[in-house]
Figure 1 (cartoon, rainbow, N blue to C red):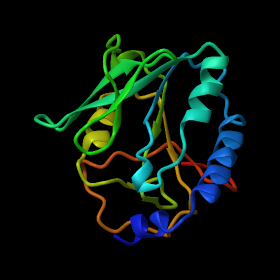
Figure 2: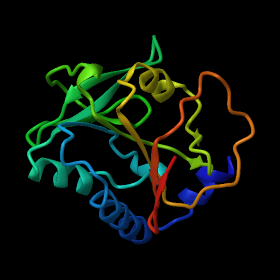
Figure 3: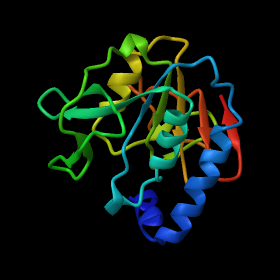
Length: 180
């Protein structure tokens, strides 16, 4: 897929700088009243956004951070409270996951930072194709913020959107915040 190849062609130095810009954009959002934040953990080999600085920023504000654990049989996500003391272990796809942790109810999550390969100007996203996040986002509170983190600007339109795809409420890029 061209989006993943474009991202994988980027150097770590560029990704680190862009990830810092994403954190700067996140700091401009009205998140003070939000208590529980779901955030994905980076797959280094796929050159994903570095999310640890965002996680550390949330911890410094005494926010509850929840990370996903993948259930491959049901193609769903379980949610676990993530603390600084926790060990991470890569699953069979290289996704870091906590080795233990306190389960977290989806009903308590106020903000979801969503991984993506690309997004469009209407708030639709392209993920990795497993549907894990679309299933999860469908179960979130309607008022939960669904914020994509993208290293690149949007494309005009994703053509193959279907009824199971769940749109974003926001997307952060290194240069701006998109609100849908």
